[in-house]
Amino acid sequence: MSEPTHTPTAAGSPRIIAWCAWHKDVADGVRLIQVDEQGSGAGGVRYACLDCITTHHLVPFADREAGR
Ligand SMILES: [Zn+2]
Image (tube, rainbow, N blue to C red; front, side, top):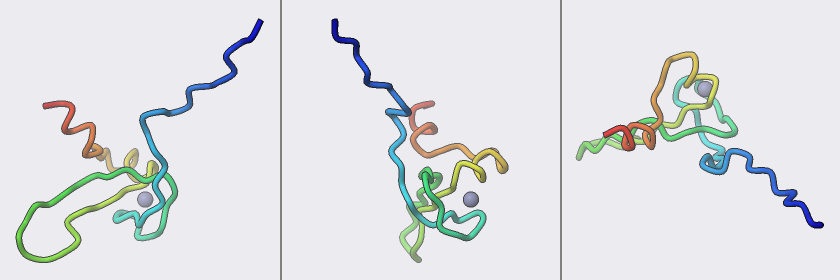
């Protein structure tokens, strides 16, 4: 018989390589943390790597939306 060999590994978390605004470096697997919708200025979007999320007790933007 055929067994399903597909292992569900973190299906809901796509890997993004981006600038971590907390430790100021490029990181693999960052999460979108904050979106500032202010009319002036740029850079309202901040990403943080998993280490910084844990260290600074950050709440990913997607999780925050779901909590409402
Ligand atoms: Zn970081």
